[in-house]
Length: 389
Ligand code: ATP
Ligand code: MG
Image (cartoon, rainbow, N blue to C red):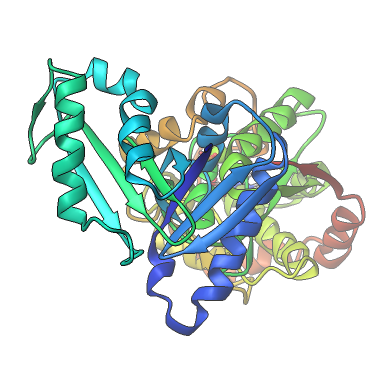
């Protein structure tokens, strides 16, 4: 008898011939995350991963960690017992005592993948319904909307008893979709964009532009703290901090003020594409959405995109700020994002930014700068930090 965690696969159950590869990734990601607690063994069968700890540990903490692993749609602690109806009868009420005492209604769900087990699924339900009703006389059965679902799963190696499942993080296993680089500021949007693309299976590399002394160390710490929250879902993230002061000062000295933002963004994109390519990333990710600020009009977005050839993913493109905030609260980045530290963009914001920048006009302004040298210099001074999940 042992307490384990049962994790139900989501979309990867549909992946046909690739399913094994996806499942292996899922197990690898889960193991990496859970290893901070103890060593684990994993079994995969029938779209369920069973995680078995080698020691007695805090299983609630383990469930919390697993609820942030992309690829699972539902999970729960479960008691693994011998496939013996007497033991199941004896242990179910005991194992689920707290949940059943707190409930008013319940139902039993039984699944039997071992067809040699003497009782069928409906028979297990009947039997266990009676056992629970006599041990917890305050309960009644509600098959449509029960407070607690008592699950009895008779599988090949063992039987499992568990109560209500919690929702998993959904999505696809990290790494299954390759790698992309998130341009991360200290704001609300970019951590949400990072989380959304990680959810689709992308491993993240992060790039932050810092402009000391206009931006402080605390602003950089904020980015680190935000990524730490994202990494709880995405696994480890490498953060590349790019010194941006020189480029911003050059733009400020030599170019028309109304183009500051768009020029800054074009340099960010060029530098990011180089860093991304050096780190095997196939795309860039930003937290932009149409119409949010002057640099996020269709014209401005086209103007920033035109300096890179890598695809640029903008998962927030059609979202309202309120919708983004809802996600940022859910992933616990909101409170950090609203801390009042300056960002390199706000420091050099023009009073009247161009919303319809003309390509010719922008290129003419850039010709006033030694772009290649400035970009090389910035890339040569990048600092890289590792943020563990
Ligand atoms: P956020 O809330 O993420 O800061 P925002 O709405 O404030 O976004 P902008 O400041 O215009 O928008 O930035 C748009 C996007 O550009 C950000 O979502 C982010 O992807 C990227 N970005 C902005 N500033 C930086 C920075 N200092 N370093 C890296 N990327 C940045
Ligand atoms: Mg910002």
